[in-house]
Image 1: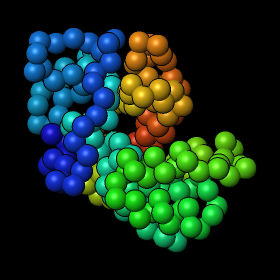
Image 2 (image 1 turned 90 degrees about the vertical axis):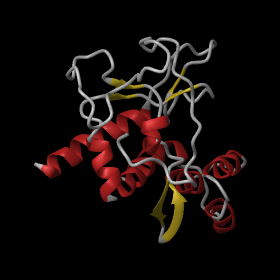
Image 3 (image 1 turned 180 degrees about the vertical axis):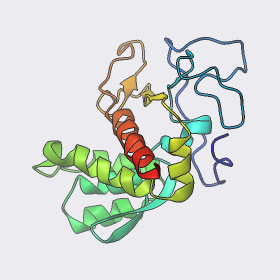
Image 4 (image 1 turned 45 degrees about the vertical axis):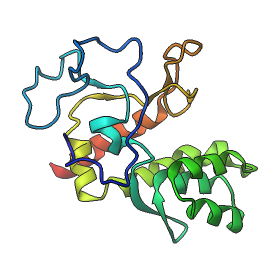
Length: 193
């Protein structure tokens, strides 16, 4: 795999492959080949990562990695992003100390959003992702996705940051998380040159 594998505390579940994903025999890998496996080149049909799970779980905002928001450390980008929805210190603290990214997300859904949230949320996410992928192992893993299209595929109706592949949504979505990651990957690639 791209990373040596998630630590025991990393989330291990994720969305199933979307229905429009290329099909392979059972057990075959779908997506860019992990490091040290032969590749068919960037035009191969598998040059797309459909879900931020399995060998690509590190792309998920649920991946446990310390990031900062307004001078405080958060255990994941999900924790920090959800806390950023509010300007109330007590609300932010309850999210910061949530025992899991999933719980942080649940708490974030209960907040009254700050008045400028729609105007700032993409910039906040971009900043958190830049922090996350400054960590050497995560930076290298992101770069090793090559030119793969990164798609935050899901079945929980997130059509802003991802594409929802439930029957109702049918793969629609803006995929802002995937797009932000691809822009960041290009930026990191340029810094490596």
